[in-house]
Length: 319
Ligand code: SAH
Image (cartoon, rainbow, N blue to C red):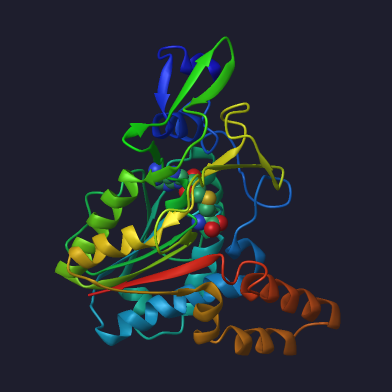
């Protein structure tokens, strides 16, 4: 990875993140499956099937309000394909939905694309992969993005000065080191602009689920995760997951500006409204006592305010 840095003595935080995550040879996502117990972090769809099932049901519910004969069901950053697999299974019985949709997975990682292909084999007759979001077909767009926006490169500013990453001889450091940090995520703004503009024009709906904040800057949110623990973001670039908290005010503002309606709630509220407890009850009825305990503790992890319930927000975009 350090070889990839050699061309430039100084990088913006965004350039550094981009290289560390998506460099074709050394990039973190490009070279491994980062998810699960053997990886570096675990996401909601990997914790419980209920998560993907309810995301699918919520999106299909939006489709049913204005059923269109053709629509695109798009997932951004689909990981192992677990969420889409659960979403497709949960929506199979909805009359006309599977016949109407083309499924598209926007993914840059060749490793994860391979895993998604295996996971999703025989789930739907029309699944395609794309590395870039655009172009989108002129039909209603239903999208889901779980822990996708947090992986997009951010820039950091202290006052009007951009915070940079310097490196020399394998040592990396920030300049300035500290200060009152403000963050922007240009790629996130562009992607939301494209998604919301499309939904305003052609219809559809979207779900953005991520850890993030509202109400103004939270300072430095750049973080590295390795083996399920926080790591130094500058240590061994390409070997740890790098993320930044999502500025939901900024995302909601662009989506609103593009002519869509937006709403925001916590993950706990979202799962409760979608009937997570009922679904867990139904799963438990056909489970052994040990399985039922696992189902309940997984749901607790997703919904409890002390765990993922409040740290994660759900933003819904509708026409
Ligand atoms: N949504 C999944 C995975 C989250 S990890 C889950 O919840 O389990 C982030 C995902 O986004 C990975 O699949 C990663 O390869 C993908 N990704 C990161 N940057 C991307 C980009 N610029 N374009 C498309 N996919 C990207």
